[in-house]
Image (cartoon, rainbow, N blue to C red; front, side, top):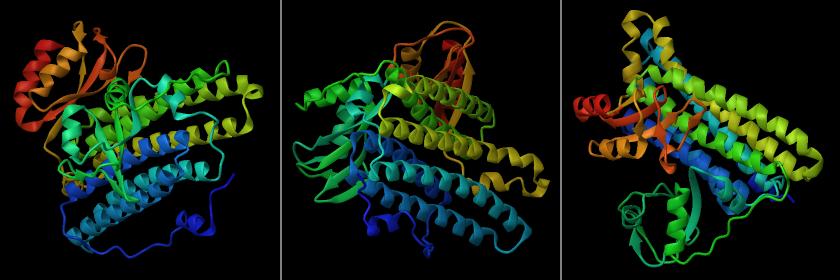
Length: 400
């Protein structure tokens, strides 16, 4: 059953609006685009399977904010370089980045559109929880007035959204106060999220799907979603840390997603006569949108590869248009058996963390959610503060 009134339908087809210049750093603008786009994917995935129509409508407002940041990014670069050949090249870089982010935003909107017109799978988010291995999303009513940081200090989770008196606050600051009974949308490793719910007395139920073969479809779909979020993060590290070696890793992930996409299609074709039409259509739809997000993330990572085609005097534009952040990211090939949790423990001393792991079998988007022993030949991608580069290099050499 459709939930789209004419006024809601118009929100999916907004006319272009004037974006006024706001003084800010390009770095801050890009970080906000990155952060909000990352959040939108996980929230849309949650809304889709939990049938959270109110959240779906608010994701449209989140999309509007992302579009405004893209506009600010383009305006800042246009003002910095003006009407010149240099400005033309800067505009080209802005165009490639902006169009890729716009593709991701359109896919997120298509996910919530499918929800609102009533074509989602007859699969609950409790069933998604059953088969998830990485990060998941849940809601929690604030039991008392508290600051966001009070919750995130106690549990290693992200507060993606706070809803208070029908007011939606995406990505609240750590110091933000949350009033009692406000609803928080929280993301974290499955084990941590379920422990949090238990500690706060929130009942939840893990449910299996009842169609043979559908469980593997759901596992693979969750894997693709996890990979798309990881690809988006790695693509931004390519841009903002200017690490070209990660381009190959993003490309490899995109190939993995393509392969898994076809695997799901084959699995669905084998059980098509055992699932209802809305579930079949709903799964095919979200699969296609996640694939488009992965493709757009791959495009973002390849923007820096244009440097070789730029005239020598304009190559500096890459580090200026995409202002660097004070972090370094590195892909490491393991040379000896390495306990991942131990490596993460040492990295934390230098503000570092493990982003992803590639074993001989496949990529693992949220490796710290599992007990992993890395073997020689496995790859691990780590990120750390630039000021501790020397210490981390020694640590990596010693531990891997």
